[in-house]
Length: 379
RNA sequence: GGGAGUGUGCCCGAGUGGCUAAAGGGGACGGGCUGUAAACCCGUUGGCUAUGCCUACCAUGGUUCGAAUCCAUGCGCUCCCA
Image (tube, rainbow, N blue to C red; front, side, top):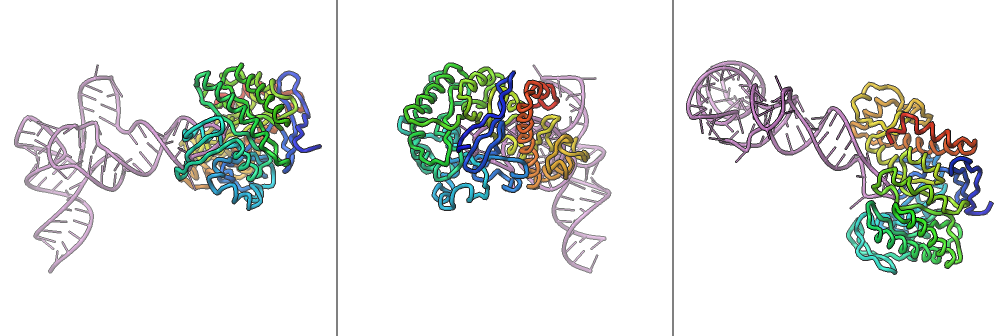
């Protein structure tokens, strides 16, 4: 197998679900898979050892935050993100475009690039697709995302269209500027909730590939999960996913709700990332087969059962709800750590089960079983 | 035995005549979190037959149109002197 091949192990006959293996410089990623988010080169509260134990195959980091601190040059001097943070498996970096737009600190946006103000010290910075590629190549992740513009919801059609055009142009420039042969570059589909703009975005990405004389190794689907009702995304997601090349990984950016994951896999998505499992964990929430559990609730104070009786994670083998509730209520750091481990395992395991179902040709049943479960109502 | 101070809702604590069912904390209870400026943010916290009424600021009595706020007595606690 050569680098960046996306081998498809199975295609579900009745849904668009697929099971695949994406080859990167730091190993193979089996899909469908959930990627834990480690914005600042750390999945908050979780050591790389634990990430391995939880079955994490690839984690995310963020170019915006790492560019500001500690700076791409320091990470490059360390030998790249992998050695810097002690994680020898695949890493994906997000460009930081999402931060620049969502933090509303963009000063100016023009055809060439953008200016923004640092969230840390108010200093001014200018980025272009080329400089962003330079940053991400210094960081040295296995997969890097193009610089793009993510629009919230609701939004004016014209605004969405502008973002589609700008993102596609930046996609071309990122593709042309990117030179590291050990790094995959993903283009990003935008277009809001409008199917014609989504399909146009995909066309433009293909044009960008032609112009650059080089294809993207995979595609991100951005601009969803930005405040719209869940159903709204599924009105277009399936068509968007199936309009993308069969033999390249599809990454639905920013989605981590268990039910959404199960349904999106059925729509043909391979990769996900989200802060939801780790953030809600630090705030005291556990994913479980019974739905979301708020460990702060008094009803758990004498509950000496595991977080999820059906779970095989290390946390559920060793600790009780009552103990974790105690830690959370007392604001002991271990509470957030244990819940983070459990929630990450929950999503990773969910995706492993989804993969098994695809391989065994029973994804329809798997999805139906999930939707009928008590957990589904909660997510 | 004498003197000084103090007593507020689950706890601490503001308030010293009406705008006070009573600031602010804490605690308790509940909600939120989706390409991480989040181990964070928000709400509720006397009762009810609920756009009003009742009960409440140690107890009892009093002053006043009106008191958690002023006065008297009692009780509790704290400190000082003997």
